Image (cartoon, rainbow, N blue to C red; front, side, top):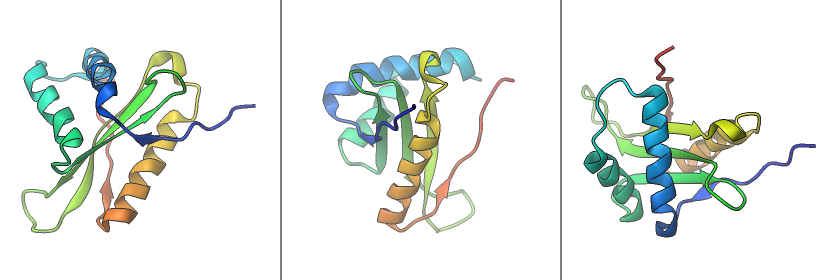
Length: 124
């Protein structure tokens, strides 16, 4: 029986694991060059409570992450919670991690009171 592992807000001690997962995500799905400086900037926005949230899932290690950004589309003054990335390490893709992280995003959206915007980016 599969048991659901709760998604929780990332803590600074998980920063290195999160950065490695961001690199793996780019290797698999990246469409442009990778700037680790920009990746670190986005990750640190979450740890500094600057309009970003990172959720992590996994028992003893980080097995997947969801990155969310409070943002606005170019044509509106309305705010949304934008999914920047939802990535599960290949070894855990048979789990419910991806769906659980979407539920985490929905919970954050409800708590903040702005809509969650999710889309798929893939090279396939």
